[in-house]
Image (cartoon, rainbow, N blue to C red; front, top):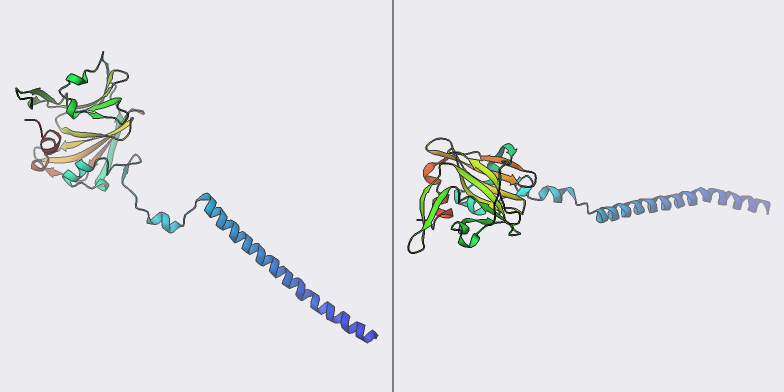
Length: 239
């Protein structure tokens, strides 16, 4: 009888460590599964995407965080310009020239067809009235009586009844067009005249809120004969 009890006792002791080890292994396995599950939930909750997804996203060329390819599409396409070839040259303050007016008579304004309204319709980008002298002939057609050697871009604020100068350039630069981004930011585009026969595209980024203008030059010159955006596009209806 005693011999039987000793055998049973030895068997129990020999089996106990294996059961404990198995229990520890099961517990450890549960911990690993729970950690993996937590990580998966954390990734899903925080919206973390795999690194390959981020790297595969196409990055748009931007100016001050603004992708400008679509905004300037008509001008860029006309000259076959590539956004990535524009490089920032400098930044300067917005001209401190603001004129107060009594009212804006838009109904009788001959330059109205060339104005660019901001999205909220409270501001007008004017790049024409200073640069070209217009009148109408007997048939009501617009005709040009000449142009100024300098160019100016201004913003007319219909709410405050003020005119803010945004850009003023001399004879070595040409303003061709302007495009609103939102109510406080806009692009003005044109050309730098290197000499009598070479032109280089320019983009001015105007921030009305922070009162700054960033200047971007293209990395290539164009022959003068190809620089005809004003004639063929902007002022094509002016005789």
